[in-house]
Image (cartoon, rainbow, N blue to C red; front, top):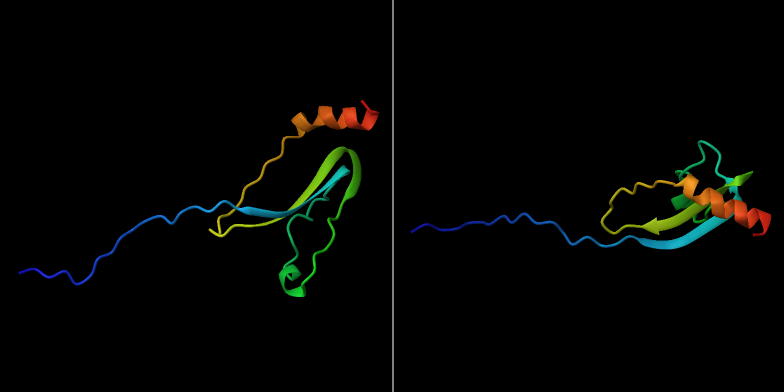
Length: 94
């Protein structure tokens, strides 16, 4: 009579939505090239550095703090053309 010694089941764990803890938006500024991401020692020092920005009236700088329990890599995109009209209207007061 055959005996089963072990069983292996492959499955995908339930995907958990990422949680955004904080968002910083600076209208009229942009983040300089090379300043993206957190410094390597930010997690060990216990404090966050301010968002480094350069004044640019045609830009909006955004920084967020979030975590993903599934350890998934995030990919972001920006749509500058869609943001141009509202920014111009806000700058001109209309």
